[in-house]
Image 1 (cartoon, rainbow, N blue to C red):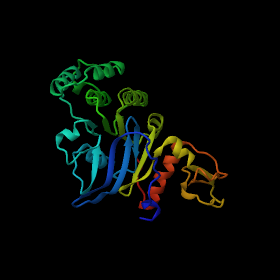
Image 2: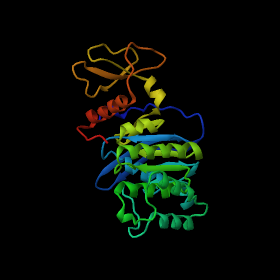
Image 3: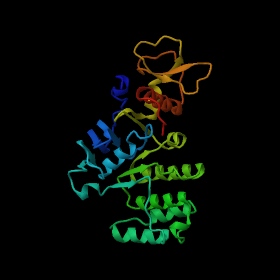
Image 4: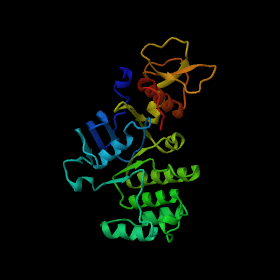
Length: 304
């Protein structure tokens, strides 16, 4: 991997309290090798952060390690200031996690699932899942093996939200949903973050929904975070210029604009205090350029 792909990420220093900090995190599996390599990041409280990266790059591993289900080879994860892997089960009590494959009792309905969750967890707010399922027209009195795959994901997400987690980790939560429901679900996630101060980290490859819902963005590649920042900062530090134009002083080349056509343009990273003559770009194109940079550094990959 070249030096550009291993360089430090753009990072916006949070000005408020942190919901989660990850310091020097490495995860290595026997037989498959290094997945995460000295990764560091921080999530401000109340933020909605989209985690983006090529398929198989380790997004699920990162979420599972933050949730406490994977033990790192080295490094530390703190949620609300508590070491996730050194503080026992109590350290993971404020984290909600929804994996890609949800597990529900097929012969039971959503109402029964909510009742079980409320009985098992003191302080469980059953009003949150009940309201969410009602707003999204998910039947509460139908067996979960007789509702759609997207509705099952909504039920599982609603159950997690009832715990009012301080940190919510979502692994491709809207994969089985149609576009309209995706937008509605992301709207509910944003509402949760704003209403209860929940910090959300969502791994996704649905860029349109992610850019509409998230206020921060992380790009994962080569085992590390290669891009980290909120939308205004990222847009202020990137421009496009013609492919044949000289690189402005202090600027760094990122990648060609995906689908640029005849007017070949490239995305560059700039110092916002040193204005350049380039053009602004959309957040979607900015993120796609950084994904393209990862693909050129590591070989062809399907971006997710």
